[in-house]
Length: 338
Image (cartoon, rainbow, N blue to C red; front, side, top):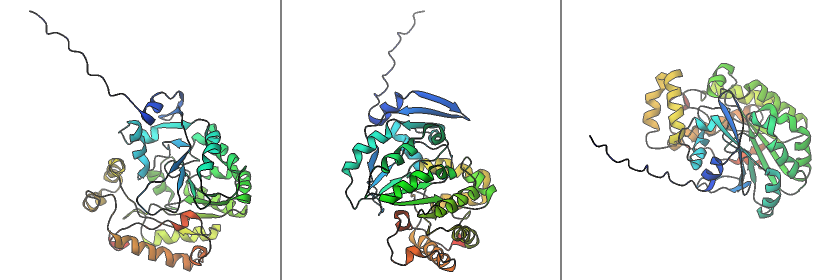
């Protein structure tokens, strides 16, 4: 019997841009199902091109990916630029940007006086990798050599307290604000929502330490997760604790779900909050955001709680930290009726 001729396998498409650079990354080490790779970058500053109104022009992300593994994380899509379609790879393959401080030194020439910079919008700058690689610390050391910039840092980690000295140096000659994300004070709930992030009480301690060091710091309750963290009682618990820790402002935005995020978040719901699954499927059907009245009600509730606990600096028309100016996005029903 004659055999059929072997056909050549089709060529894989050639990787380009960030996907090619990621494929060339050198493996640094592995730990608890997390791999670390080097990533060569041509620049550190990224111009924000979002169609939403945001209070910053530039973003800095010292790493690609984040091992905190927050079930709701919107930034999982960023690994798709490297041809990684599995949303879980965002927390399993962490890319460490090389020569970040040198790149920042060059990039800062592009920043105009009225353009704010946000550090940590798509990855946490103080995730566990930072303990070893200190990319964020190198970035702060570079900022400390400059003056006149507006910088906001967003993090879920109390590791930021390690850099108190540098943060104070940066704040002497620049406008600096730190935004610590605390979605709930319920430790058990936080452990399943944000499985490898520091406990919320440790984050609140960091808020207190930053304020005592004279730094401008506030609390982000974002994302507020309908049916899980959006009850008035839960939000009041966070805002009261933020006030007691000395936070100068609090802000909150509702959850939004890109398809890559929904692919991780909906199975999480099925396992932990099955009674919410159908509700979410209907309300997020073919859209990342829910309608506007939910966000309006959330904004009103947060404003009233800020007033109750006198976390009202951002309401008095003073120069505000950039995250305190982030607009609340849109939802529709009363919080308790999601």
